[in-house]
Length: 368
Image (cartoon, rainbow, N blue to C red; front, side):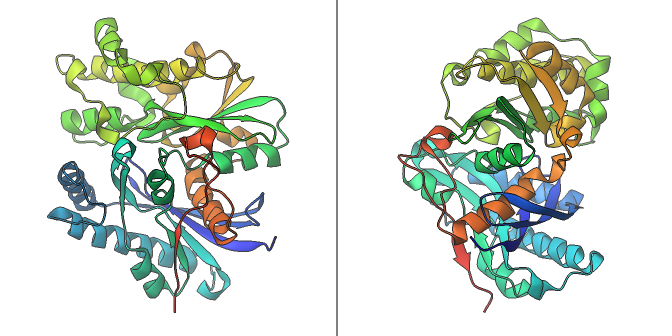
């Protein structure tokens, strides 16, 4: 297949900003890793996104944009366009040399049981502004067919593992606002699911208690103690017993069980919750993997990494130890998925989303 130069854009459920990553690929293997960029959202952007999340709870039409959702969609589109323009300028790249952009948008509602998933961001407007073709809305086809629509990155995780020459079974953990896991064993279709909350609850706690939207390096959790009763309450959820594939909405869990705890103890308990929910997912895999590779923002949380090492039945490593750009992997994945979409290759599989068959996806907005 033809090698394509694709620029992937990702704004995750942590709502920290836009990741951009350039990738040269044929949609089967990542053939060349290129520059990356992170463009943080402004405080007012995050406030608007939180208002949009609250408004989206009542949506039953994925195209509707009532109240702050319309403003949030314009903002998301603008911030992604600005991120691309900055990326191209800082790296001396001519837009004409980029074949396609893979645009995830910002998820504001994910209810696959209702065949409903909503990612705001105007792919057509982005293509017109940048003069580059854009593949977007990559979850919709899977959800419409009865799949979970998430996670979408497993096929890229499999390609990364293969390109790294790793043998045997490998679990790739992506810990963003929601955490997800991909079980890779050779060329077999990957097995994947959302494991539970990643950073979202911890971020919400820290923003509410301290005004800072994260537990930097896991320092607050490291200073606290796990409340076992609160942890047991958090883990008492039928989701954790369901086999993969399965997926979550950012708002499926709340801070209620830790409301009475001091901030450090609440952070420690929520960090333990993330690690324990991931460990529960490992128990549902066909066999224990020999290695777990952690990427995403959660890999920077040292308290979380220690908790994972204590709870998981295998060696736990950071993605950077394998030469991967841990925080840009999802952006790279959407570049990879855009190329697969152009080539009519499947983005999702029965073992990753519960789709009835391997499914292509994505919509193409032409620049012209």
